[in-house]
Image 1 (cartoon, rainbow, N blue to C red):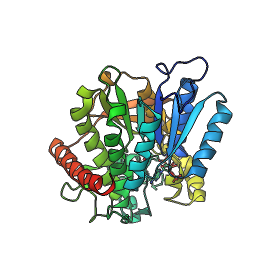
Image 2 (image 1 turned 90 degrees about the horizontal axis):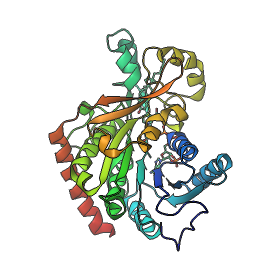
Image 3 (image 1 turned 90 degrees about the vertical axis):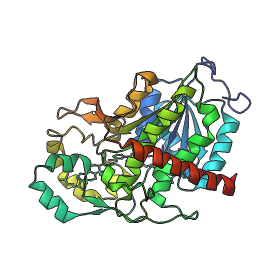
Length: 343
Ligand SMILES: NC(=O)C1=CN([C@@H]2O[C@H](COP(=O)(O)OP(=O)(O)OC[C@H]3O[C@@H](n4cnc5c(N)ncnc54)[C@H](OP(=O)(O)O)[C@@H]3O)[C@@H](O)[C@H]2O)C=CC1
Ligand SMILES: CC(C)=CCC[C@@H](C)[C@H]1CC[C@H]2C3=C(CC[C@]12C)[C@@]1(C)CCC(=O)[C@@H](C)[C@@H]1CC3
């Protein structure tokens, strides 16, 4: 941190204080992650990167109520708006000299619709457990286009974060003291929803699934490109968590009604973490891990057993490495266009 902008708090020196930034930190899994990180390491400097100042201030108040001595800063960024990302990156570079952890957590699933016929036929098929744990084939969304002509889901869930990382390279790449990127991906990520010729998912109706698979691809290539420079990337699935995102799929009363069924499902699949605190398990677990010990081809999944015990399950990802490289090239090209427009 640059001392001119940020005071050094009592006991900890700048070198000892880890700097952690979380996008989408004002609610759900992001906010639970912040709470748990502060409980684990009170000396952190935590920066909440959010699009709404009011909601970010609310989250900061909540965190300080639980951890009165905590050092929590706010940063305004709308990851669906590339120009806002460039502006935020400038501010970050003025405030900090390094970032130890960047949690790329902000995400959207706009206008979700349930395919009830797929749901009922899935109920009586061999795939029933997979259907309930990944939501495969059950959800469609209606996407839109932003002012740059980019797909909204792709920009929010992937590209805005990619620009942020690229702009912050100098703060993230220190070979002697590695930094970590942690993406909140999903087990809903599906290769067949992603089309390498249409990476923004302009033509399909599963932009969420496509964007999360794109995150998985990107994380793999980021490791190939940046590990030598001291930057590591991991992907996480928080499981099914009751947050604003899921309450947007079905009305709250319906979820309350089926809560006993969801507890029951937890006996068969440990992916029903349900609370944001449980959902943050894998994200918190990664915080303590040496990045070199992590497998770049693994998705770390927050899991909760039928008895309510939290743990992390490491599942090998099924990613197409050719698609990953092609996708990275696409992102670099798109970034060059945006650099020309906004830098
Ligand atoms: N809930 C679940 O079951 C699962 C969630 N996930 C992933 O977890 C992540 C967090 O979601 P979750 O906590 O569930 O849902 P929430 O809706 O509670 O959290 C999403 C966060 O992202 C922020 N956000 C959305 N759009 C933008 C934007 N354009 N710029 C900046 N911030 C933005 C939201 O801010 P605001 O309050 O302003 O909207 C909010 O803070 C997402 O990436 C989601 O895909 C993955 C698997 C399962
Ligand atoms: C649980 C019962 C009895 C009914 C609910 C059916 C669906 C609404 C539900 C089943 C599997 C869920 C699921 C998700 C959303 C809601 C379901 C489709 C996600 C796709 C939400 C976002 C994610 O990222 C995934 C990890 C979730 C996977 C499971």
